[in-house]
Image 1: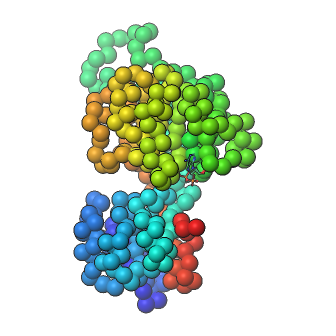
Image 2: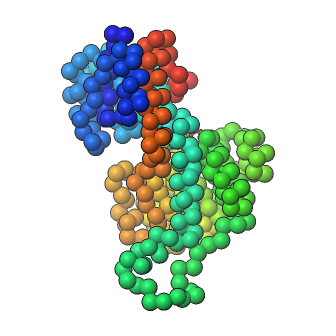
Image 3: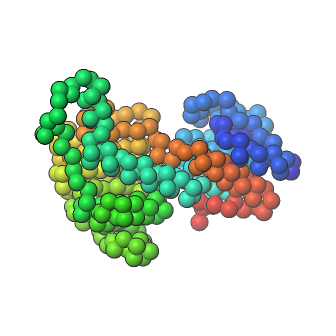
Length: 323
Ligand code: NAD
Protein backbone atom coordinates (compact mmCIF):
# COMPACT_ATOMS: atom_id res chain seq x y z
CA UNK A 1 0.00 0.00 0.00
CA UNK A 2 1.59 3.27 -1.03
CA UNK A 3 0.69 5.19 2.14
CA UNK A 4 2.71 6.87 4.87
CA UNK A 5 1.77 7.92 8.35
CA UNK A 6 3.32 9.90 11.19
CA UNK A 7 3.36 8.43 14.71
CA UNK A 8 3.98 11.14 17.30
CA UNK A 9 5.76 8.80 19.77
CA UNK A 10 6.92 5.19 19.84
CA UNK A 11 4.15 2.58 20.01
CA UNK A 12 4.61 -1.18 20.68
CA UNK A 13 5.94 -3.36 17.85
CA UNK A 14 2.62 -5.27 17.71
CA UNK A 15 1.06 -2.24 15.96
CA UNK A 16 4.09 -1.41 13.83
CA UNK A 17 4.21 -5.00 12.51
CA UNK A 18 0.62 -4.75 11.23
CA UNK A 19 1.53 -1.56 9.36
CA UNK A 20 4.68 -3.19 7.91
CA UNK A 21 2.67 -6.22 6.72
CA UNK A 22 0.46 -3.87 4.69
CA UNK A 23 3.44 -1.95 3.33
CA UNK A 24 2.43 1.26 5.09
CA UNK A 25 5.53 3.33 5.81
CA UNK A 26 5.84 5.40 8.96
CA UNK A 27 8.01 7.94 10.74
CA UNK A 28 8.03 8.07 14.54
CA UNK A 29 8.65 11.15 16.71
CA UNK A 30 11.88 10.78 18.66
CA UNK A 31 10.87 12.38 21.97
CA UNK A 32 10.12 10.16 24.97
CA UNK A 33 7.99 12.95 26.42
CA UNK A 34 4.85 14.48 24.91
CA UNK A 35 5.92 16.60 21.91
CA UNK A 36 4.75 20.21 21.79
CA UNK A 37 2.34 21.31 19.07
CA UNK A 38 5.23 23.19 17.44
CA UNK A 39 7.29 19.99 17.27
CA UNK A 40 4.42 18.00 15.74
CA UNK A 41 3.77 20.76 13.17
CA UNK A 42 7.49 20.80 12.24
CA UNK A 43 7.52 17.02 11.75
CA UNK A 44 4.30 16.97 9.72
CA UNK A 45 5.55 19.64 7.32
CA UNK A 46 8.32 17.31 6.13
CA UNK A 47 6.12 14.88 4.13
CA UNK A 48 2.59 14.64 2.75
CA UNK A 49 1.45 12.06 5.33
CA UNK A 50 -1.85 10.23 4.75
CA UNK A 51 -2.54 9.59 8.45
CA UNK A 52 -1.37 10.01 12.00
CA UNK A 53 -1.26 7.89 15.15
CA UNK A 54 -1.60 10.32 18.05
CA UNK A 55 -1.64 10.25 21.85
CA UNK A 56 -3.99 11.94 24.31
CA UNK A 57 -1.30 14.58 24.91
CA UNK A 58 -1.19 15.63 21.22
CA UNK A 59 -3.48 18.55 20.37
CA UNK A 60 -4.98 17.70 16.97
CA UNK A 61 -6.41 20.98 15.74
CA UNK A 62 -6.45 23.39 12.82
CA UNK A 63 -2.70 24.15 13.05
CA UNK A 64 -1.82 20.46 12.85
CA UNK A 65 -4.04 19.81 9.82
CA UNK A 66 -2.90 23.00 8.10
CA UNK A 67 0.68 21.73 8.49
CA UNK A 68 -0.25 18.51 6.69
CA UNK A 69 -3.51 18.88 4.72
CA UNK A 70 -3.12 15.40 3.17
CA UNK A 71 -4.01 13.64 6.45
CA UNK A 72 -7.19 11.63 6.05
CA UNK A 73 -7.16 9.52 9.23
CA UNK A 74 -6.18 10.00 12.90
CA UNK A 75 -5.94 6.93 15.11
CA UNK A 76 -5.80 8.08 18.72
CA UNK A 77 -3.85 5.76 21.00
CA UNK A 78 -6.32 6.11 23.94
CA UNK A 79 -9.95 5.75 24.93
CA UNK A 80 -10.48 9.48 25.51
CA UNK A 81 -10.21 11.74 22.47
CA UNK A 82 -10.62 15.16 24.06
CA UNK A 83 -7.28 16.13 22.41
CA UNK A 84 -8.99 16.09 18.99
CA UNK A 85 -10.87 19.15 17.71
CA UNK A 86 -13.93 17.26 16.48
CA UNK A 87 -15.52 20.15 14.56
CA UNK A 88 -12.23 20.68 12.68
CA UNK A 89 -11.87 17.01 11.65
CA UNK A 90 -15.54 16.88 10.65
CA UNK A 91 -15.12 19.95 8.44
CA UNK A 92 -12.09 18.34 6.79
CA UNK A 93 -13.69 14.90 6.43
CA UNK A 94 -10.93 13.23 8.43
CA UNK A 95 -11.82 9.99 10.21
CA UNK A 96 -10.82 9.59 13.86
CA UNK A 97 -10.66 6.44 15.96
CA UNK A 98 -9.92 5.55 19.59
CA UNK A 99 -9.10 2.31 21.43
CA UNK A 100 -12.26 1.54 23.41
CA UNK A 101 -12.62 -1.33 25.86
CA UNK A 102 -9.01 -2.53 25.78
CA UNK A 103 -7.93 -0.98 29.05
CA UNK A 104 -11.25 -1.07 30.93
CA UNK A 105 -10.24 -3.86 33.32
CA UNK A 106 -6.86 -2.29 34.06
CA UNK A 107 -8.44 1.12 34.77
CA UNK A 108 -11.17 -0.49 36.90
CA UNK A 109 -8.55 -2.42 38.89
CA UNK A 110 -6.51 0.75 39.41
CA UNK A 111 -9.65 2.56 40.59
CA UNK A 112 -10.38 -0.20 43.11
CA UNK A 113 -6.72 -0.16 44.22
CA UNK A 114 -6.98 3.60 44.87
CA UNK A 115 -10.17 3.07 46.88
CA UNK A 116 -8.49 0.33 48.92
CA UNK A 117 -5.38 2.45 49.47
CA UNK A 118 -7.49 5.37 50.70
CA UNK A 119 -9.75 3.39 53.01
CA UNK A 120 -6.91 1.27 54.47
CA UNK A 121 -4.51 4.27 54.57
CA UNK A 122 -1.74 2.22 52.97
CA UNK A 123 0.20 5.14 51.48
CA UNK A 124 0.06 7.08 54.75
CA UNK A 125 1.28 3.97 56.59
CA UNK A 126 4.12 3.51 54.11
CA UNK A 127 5.27 7.13 54.56
CA UNK A 128 4.97 6.74 58.35
CA UNK A 129 7.25 3.67 58.34
CA UNK A 130 9.86 5.18 56.04
CA UNK A 131 10.09 8.26 58.26
CA UNK A 132 10.87 6.00 61.25
CA UNK A 133 7.76 7.17 63.11
CA UNK A 134 6.56 3.68 64.14
CA UNK A 135 7.19 3.20 67.86
CA UNK A 136 5.06 0.09 68.46
CA UNK A 137 1.50 -1.18 67.99
CA UNK A 138 -1.10 1.45 68.78
CA UNK A 139 -4.86 0.72 68.67
CA UNK A 140 -5.56 4.29 67.52
CA UNK A 141 -2.97 4.43 64.74
CA UNK A 142 -4.17 5.25 61.20
CA UNK A 143 -7.74 4.03 61.63
CA UNK A 144 -9.23 3.08 58.27
CA UNK A 145 -12.75 2.84 56.84
CA UNK A 146 -14.80 -0.34 56.34
CA UNK A 147 -16.01 -1.00 52.80
CA UNK A 148 -18.67 -3.67 53.36
CA UNK A 149 -22.24 -2.31 53.08
CA UNK A 150 -20.96 1.15 52.13
CA UNK A 151 -22.29 2.84 49.00
CA UNK A 152 -20.25 3.47 45.87
CA UNK A 153 -21.62 6.26 43.69
CA UNK A 154 -20.47 6.06 40.08
CA UNK A 155 -20.74 8.98 37.72
CA UNK A 156 -20.60 7.46 34.24
CA UNK A 157 -21.21 3.72 33.93
CA UNK A 158 -19.88 2.83 30.48
CA UNK A 159 -17.22 0.14 30.13
CA UNK A 160 -14.99 1.23 33.04
CA UNK A 161 -17.69 2.37 35.48
CA UNK A 162 -19.55 -0.92 34.99
CA UNK A 163 -16.44 -3.00 35.76
CA UNK A 164 -15.70 -0.92 38.87
CA UNK A 165 -19.28 -1.42 40.07
CA UNK A 166 -19.08 -5.20 39.64
CA UNK A 167 -15.67 -5.52 41.34
CA UNK A 168 -16.81 -3.49 44.35
CA UNK A 169 -20.23 -5.13 44.62
CA UNK A 170 -19.10 -8.76 44.26
CA UNK A 171 -15.64 -8.37 45.79
CA UNK A 172 -16.32 -6.11 48.75
CA UNK A 173 -20.09 -6.05 49.32
CA UNK A 174 -20.73 -2.41 48.43
CA UNK A 175 -24.13 -1.09 47.38
CA UNK A 176 -24.08 0.62 43.97
CA UNK A 177 -25.82 3.81 42.87
CA UNK A 178 -25.01 5.67 39.67
CA UNK A 179 -25.73 8.63 37.48
CA UNK A 180 -25.40 8.51 33.68
CA UNK A 181 -27.11 10.01 30.66
CA UNK A 182 -28.46 6.56 29.84
CA UNK A 183 -29.91 3.79 31.98
CA UNK A 184 -27.61 0.76 32.32
CA UNK A 185 -30.02 -2.18 32.65
CA UNK A 186 -27.25 -4.78 32.55
CA UNK A 187 -25.49 -3.12 35.49
CA UNK A 188 -28.73 -2.74 37.43
CA UNK A 189 -29.50 -6.43 37.01
CA UNK A 190 -25.96 -7.54 37.88
CA UNK A 191 -25.46 -5.37 40.96
CA UNK A 192 -28.97 -4.45 42.09
CA UNK A 193 -27.97 -0.84 41.49
CA UNK A 194 -30.16 2.20 41.05
CA UNK A 195 -29.87 5.15 38.64
CA UNK A 196 -30.21 8.51 40.37
CA UNK A 197 -29.69 12.19 39.71
CA UNK A 198 -26.07 13.31 40.07
CA UNK A 199 -27.05 15.47 43.06
CA UNK A 200 -28.54 12.42 44.85
CA UNK A 201 -25.48 10.27 44.12
CA UNK A 202 -23.20 12.97 45.53
CA UNK A 203 -25.28 13.29 48.68
CA UNK A 204 -25.77 9.58 49.38
CA UNK A 205 -22.52 7.83 48.40
CA UNK A 206 -19.60 7.06 50.70
CA UNK A 207 -17.24 6.91 47.73
CA UNK A 208 -17.71 8.79 44.44
CA UNK A 209 -15.85 7.51 41.39
CA UNK A 210 -15.80 9.36 38.06
CA UNK A 211 -15.89 7.53 34.71
CA UNK A 212 -17.18 10.06 32.18
CA UNK A 213 -15.45 11.31 29.03
CA UNK A 214 -14.13 14.88 29.04
CA UNK A 215 -16.60 16.84 26.94
CA UNK A 216 -18.10 20.32 27.40
CA UNK A 217 -20.86 19.05 29.69
CA UNK A 218 -18.44 17.16 31.98
CA UNK A 219 -15.88 19.97 32.43
CA UNK A 220 -15.86 20.75 36.20
CA UNK A 221 -18.68 18.22 36.70
CA UNK A 222 -17.31 18.15 40.24
CA UNK A 223 -17.07 21.72 41.46
CA UNK A 224 -17.20 23.54 44.79
CA UNK A 225 -20.95 23.01 45.08
CA UNK A 226 -20.75 19.28 44.32
CA UNK A 227 -17.97 18.79 46.87
CA UNK A 228 -19.97 20.67 49.51
CA UNK A 229 -22.94 18.37 48.92
CA UNK A 230 -20.90 15.19 49.57
CA UNK A 231 -20.69 13.50 52.97
CA UNK A 232 -17.89 14.78 55.22
CA UNK A 233 -16.70 11.16 55.43
CA UNK A 234 -16.76 10.62 51.64
CA UNK A 235 -13.89 9.92 49.24
CA UNK A 236 -13.58 11.13 45.63
CA UNK A 237 -11.76 9.08 42.99
CA UNK A 238 -10.90 10.42 39.54
CA UNK A 239 -9.41 8.11 36.93
CA UNK A 240 -11.32 9.73 34.03
CA UNK A 241 -9.85 13.07 32.90
CA UNK A 242 -8.43 15.86 35.08
CA UNK A 243 -10.65 18.78 34.04
CA UNK A 244 -13.76 16.83 35.09
CA UNK A 245 -12.82 18.04 38.60
CA UNK A 246 -12.27 21.67 39.61
CA UNK A 247 -8.93 20.94 41.29
CA UNK A 248 -8.72 24.26 43.15
CA UNK A 249 -12.11 23.52 44.72
CA UNK A 250 -10.90 19.99 45.55
CA UNK A 251 -7.77 21.29 47.34
CA UNK A 252 -10.03 23.63 49.36
CA UNK A 253 -12.43 20.77 50.21
CA UNK A 254 -9.61 18.44 51.28
CA UNK A 255 -7.83 21.12 53.32
CA UNK A 256 -11.00 22.14 55.11
CA UNK A 257 -12.23 18.57 55.68
CA UNK A 258 -15.35 19.15 53.58
CA UNK A 259 -14.69 15.63 52.27
CA UNK A 260 -12.48 12.98 53.86
CA UNK A 261 -10.05 12.16 51.05
CA UNK A 262 -9.39 11.78 47.35
CA UNK A 263 -7.34 9.74 44.91
CA UNK A 264 -6.40 11.02 41.47
CA UNK A 265 -4.76 9.44 38.44
CA UNK A 266 -5.47 12.41 36.15
CA UNK A 267 -4.99 16.16 36.63
CA UNK A 268 -6.67 19.34 35.53
CA UNK A 269 -3.40 20.88 34.32
CA UNK A 270 -1.54 17.65 33.60
CA UNK A 271 1.36 17.10 34.14
CA UNK A 272 1.29 20.04 36.60
CA UNK A 273 -0.32 19.74 40.02
CA UNK A 274 -2.63 22.41 41.41
CA UNK A 275 -0.95 24.33 44.21
CA UNK A 276 -1.32 22.61 47.56
CA UNK A 277 -2.39 19.21 46.24
CA UNK A 278 0.94 17.48 46.97
CA UNK A 279 1.01 18.80 50.55
CA UNK A 280 -2.21 17.06 51.61
CA UNK A 281 -1.95 13.74 53.43
CA UNK A 282 -5.55 12.77 52.61
CA UNK A 283 -4.95 12.52 48.87
CA UNK A 284 -3.29 9.77 46.81
CA UNK A 285 -1.72 10.75 43.49
CA UNK A 286 -0.67 8.44 40.64
CA UNK A 287 0.84 9.64 37.33
CA UNK A 288 -1.90 8.70 34.81
CA UNK A 289 -1.00 5.01 34.95
CA UNK A 290 -4.43 3.43 35.37
CA UNK A 291 -4.19 1.64 32.01
CA UNK A 292 -0.45 0.96 32.16
CA UNK A 293 -0.23 -2.76 31.37
CA UNK A 294 1.91 -4.14 28.57
CA UNK A 295 -0.97 -6.29 27.28
CA UNK A 296 -3.21 -3.21 27.08
CA UNK A 297 -0.51 -1.13 25.38
CA UNK A 298 0.14 -3.88 22.78
CA UNK A 299 -3.56 -4.17 22.01
CA UNK A 300 -3.95 -0.40 21.81
CA UNK A 301 -1.13 -0.32 19.23
CA UNK A 302 -2.81 -3.09 17.22
CA UNK A 303 -6.19 -1.34 17.31
CA UNK A 304 -4.66 1.98 16.24
CA UNK A 305 -2.87 0.23 13.34
CA UNK A 306 -6.03 -1.68 12.32
CA UNK A 307 -7.98 1.59 12.23
CA UNK A 308 -5.34 3.16 9.98
CA UNK A 309 -5.39 0.12 7.66
CA UNK A 310 -9.20 0.07 7.58
CA UNK A 311 -9.33 3.77 6.69
CA UNK A 312 -6.94 3.23 3.77
CA UNK A 313 -8.70 0.08 2.56
CA UNK A 314 -12.36 1.05 3.05
CA UNK A 315 -12.43 4.80 3.70
CA UNK A 316 -13.74 4.15 7.23
CA UNK A 317 -12.16 3.46 10.62
CA UNK A 318 -13.41 0.58 12.80
CA UNK A 319 -13.67 2.53 16.07
CA UNK A 320 -14.97 5.88 14.89
CA UNK A 321 -15.48 8.57 17.55
CA UNK A 322 -17.47 10.74 15.13
CA UNK A 323 -21.23 10.20 14.94
P1 NAD B 1 -17.53 4.82 27.94
O1 NAD B 1 -17.80 5.65 26.74
O2 NAD B 1 -17.72 3.34 27.85
O3 NAD B 1 -18.41 5.36 29.18
C1 NAD B 1 -18.61 6.71 29.47
C2 NAD B 1 -19.98 6.84 30.14
O4 NAD B 1 -20.13 8.20 30.60
C3 NAD B 1 -21.16 6.56 29.20
O5 NAD B 1 -22.03 5.61 29.79
C4 NAD B 1 -21.82 7.91 29.03
O6 NAD B 1 -23.23 7.83 28.84
C5 NAD B 1 -21.49 8.57 30.37
N1 NAD B 1 -21.61 10.02 30.38
C6 NAD B 1 -21.27 10.92 29.42
N2 NAD B 1 -21.54 12.17 29.83
C7 NAD B 1 -22.07 12.06 31.09
C8 NAD B 1 -22.55 12.99 32.06
N3 NAD B 1 -22.56 14.30 31.81
N4 NAD B 1 -23.02 12.53 33.22
C9 NAD B 1 -23.04 11.20 33.50
N5 NAD B 1 -22.59 10.27 32.62
C10 NAD B 1 -22.12 10.70 31.43
O7 NAD B 1 -16.04 5.16 28.38
P2 NAD B 1 -15.06 4.29 29.32
O8 NAD B 1 -14.32 3.32 28.49
O9 NAD B 1 -15.82 3.81 30.49
O10 NAD B 1 -14.01 5.43 29.74
C11 NAD B 1 -14.43 6.57 30.47
C12 NAD B 1 -13.32 7.61 30.46
O11 NAD B 1 -12.20 7.12 31.21
C13 NAD B 1 -12.71 7.87 29.06
O12 NAD B 1 -13.46 8.82 28.33
C14 NAD B 1 -11.31 8.36 29.38
O13 NAD B 1 -11.29 9.77 29.41
C15 NAD B 1 -11.03 7.78 30.77
N6 NAD B 1 -9.91 6.83 30.74
C16 NAD B 1 -8.86 7.06 31.57
C17 NAD B 1 -7.77 6.18 31.57
C18 NAD B 1 -6.60 6.39 32.50
O14 NAD B 1 -5.51 5.94 32.18
N7 NAD B 1 -6.76 7.04 33.65
C19 NAD B 1 -7.76 5.07 30.70
C20 NAD B 1 -8.88 4.84 29.89
C21 NAD B 1 -9.94 5.74 29.90
